[in-house]
Amino acid sequence: MKIIRTGTSADAGVHAARIVAALVRDKPAAVLGLATGSSPMPLYEALAHEDLDLSQVRGFSLDEYLGLGSTHKHSYAQVIQREVIDRLGLTPSLIHTPDGQAPDAAREARDFDARIRAAGGIDIQILGIGSNGHLAFNEPPSSFTSRTRVVELADSTRKDNARFFDSLEDVPTHAITQGMGTISEARHLLLIAHDLRKAEAAARAIEGPVTEDFPASMIQLHPHVTVVLDEAAASALQHS
Image (cartoon, rainbow, N blue to C red; front, side, top):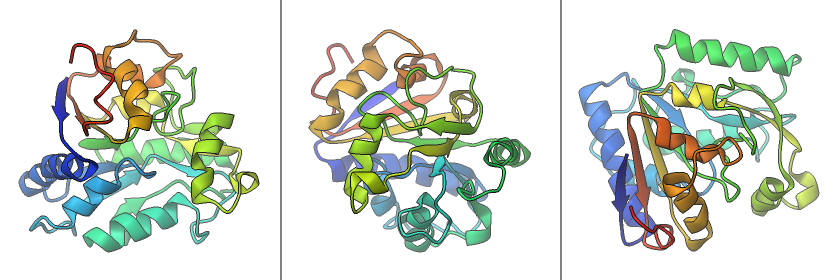
């Protein structure tokens, strides 16, 4: 595992963006795993300033709220459209997000997992981290072998995400998420965290015991992981 400490969240974004940019320059049709939430936004902002053609890049979102269609303003499909596709000049038809309004959500989850495999797997999976250690929407405890599936969101996750909605009551209670096993199959995990709120979670993921009760600790088992932290998010590390 490689740990990169930076000064600010913008610095963290620049360092993380350089990793993604290097991959795309070497492999223009690279497959990216795309995270949403606040953690990866500095990465996307910095990547937009790279002299880079991203039009051939393929992408798979980590998750989507159950019940929200792709045109809903708070859906992750819309976040990916605004913050990633439009910002970076990606080709919309090459970027995939689970359908939160699929008639059969369990089947949609299985099919999404299959589409990732059919694309040859993910080259770099961009990750944030939840305050309770969730990766994507894999709430604790989550099996390290779990596949893309429907999950119930923890109360703490809904409260954390309420800032993106009009009220807590508007935050969906369930989601479709890539599973821990799905995420672990990516060839490179790139986790970015910034802000003091993420310090304890980052430290537990990097230095704590490896346990399904803290899903992000799975990164310790992966052969190729880069963690990019700003000064605040790195403040709880003891040894790294």
